[in-house]
Image (cartoon, rainbow, N blue to C red):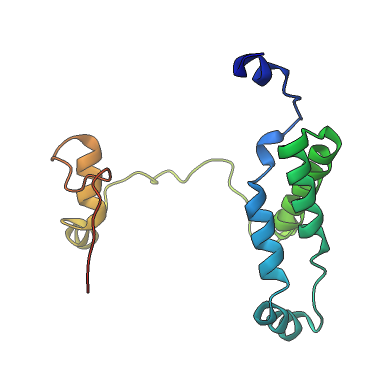
Length: 149
């Protein structure tokens, strides 16, 4: 079987795009269980946090990547959905600010003179002009640079 045929036979998982690289789950678990972070957790929350979900996610990720285990991938996606839900919960519970339906009327008006003067020649201004093609690129990311101090 060719690699193209194997790719076509790969099982698909709904919302697979949410799955991170397996090394990211390992890093999150390692950081969550480190002494420094444990001390910080005690200081902030009064107790250490449960880091076992990061470990489960890591195991499930490797099962998905190595063995194409669809059940593991679905568990991993469910974990990511729950993590995202918990991260955005304060945003949705916010009752202090009124959310806009559309941008303000003057959102794209010209900058005041004093801000325009500060902007001229700034890094952002130069990069903007480079992207528009108004000036040649001043930095080629394909070149390797080395600085010895």
